[in-house]
Length: 113
Image 1 (cartoon, rainbow, N blue to C red):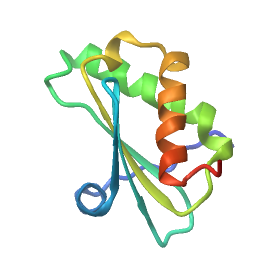
Image 2 (spheres, helix red, strand yellow; image 1 turned 135 degrees about the horizontal axis):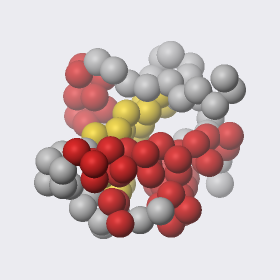
Image 3 (cartoon, rainbow, N blue to C red; image 1 turned 120 degrees about the vertical axis):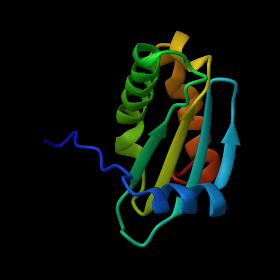
Image 4 (cartoon, one colour; image 1 turned 90 degrees about the vertical axis):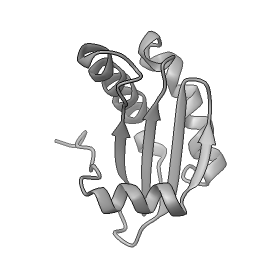
């Protein structure tokens, strides 16, 4: 299971990332990034009901997860990242979302330029 992605599970982790993290926005995706002391990169994905019904929200999460999985080998450890889906996310494919995600991670310093 080398493809296993470590996820944020606790509400306090999400709230800390929202409060202290750097924010990067795009019409398709919002990224919050903050350092952690765990030494590993953890991600969380949120989708509100504004996105659509359960099927559309789950598709948005799958697309974000697939885009992150493609970028994961370049990511340096020790970061908490929260991705927030927007209404445009559900219409995109992971290959279309990947450049946006990479741009956010490079701006945050998660991926060395």
